[in-house]
Image 1 (cartoon, one colour):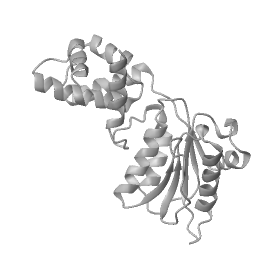
Image 2 (cartoon, rainbow, N blue to C red):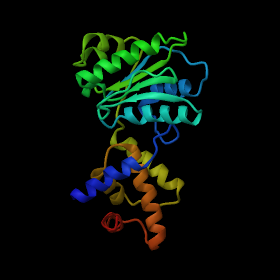
Image 3 (cartoon, rainbow, N blue to C red):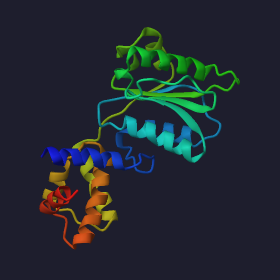
Image 4 (cartoon, one colour):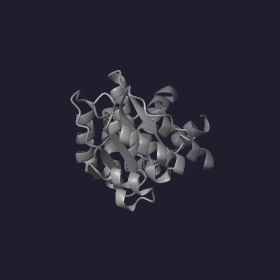
Length: 231
C-alpha cells in the first residue's frame, strides 16, 4: 500500500497545474478573479490572499498563475516553505507569489515582508501584484505582525475542497470525455485510495487510459493495481 501511496503522490506532481485543468466548483469566485488578473496586461496591484484546507486547490491556482505569466514571457518571485534561502526582490518580476505562508521560518517571513513592500513600491513606479496562500485567514496566521497585516490588505478568498460527490461527478465527466467506462466500484477505489487533489485523479485517469489501451483491457481494480505495480 505504501508503494501505491507513493505513486499517487508522483502522479499528482506530474501534471502541470493550469486554469484549464482546474475544476472551480465552489471556488468559482477565486478562480475567475485569478484567471482575469493573470490574463490581463493592465493588472490591478491590489494583493490577493487565498486560504483553505489541504486539497482545496490553493497551490494549483498559484501555479496556474505562474504558468499563465510564463506563457506571456513574464517572471515572478516564488516562495514556498522549501525555499530556504530566498533571493532579494527583483525589479524584473511581474509579481510576487507566496505559497503555504503558515510554514514560513523567520528568514522566509523577513524575505516575504521585503518582497511585499518592494512589490507595492517598486522603484519604477509600477506596483507589482502579490498573491499569497495559507491554511488560515490572515488574522489567524502565526506570523510576524507586519507580514500578517499586509496579507490581509486586499482581496481574500476562502477555498473549499470538493465534496466526494463533486469529485465523482468530475471524474465521471472526464472519463466520459475520453470514452472510458468506469464502473462504480472502480470509482469508489480511485476516490478512496488516492489523493483528494483533483489534479492527481485526472493524471491517474490519463495513465489508466494509456495503460488500458496498451494492455487492451477494460479499466478494473485489478488493472489499476497492475499498472501501479509496473510503475
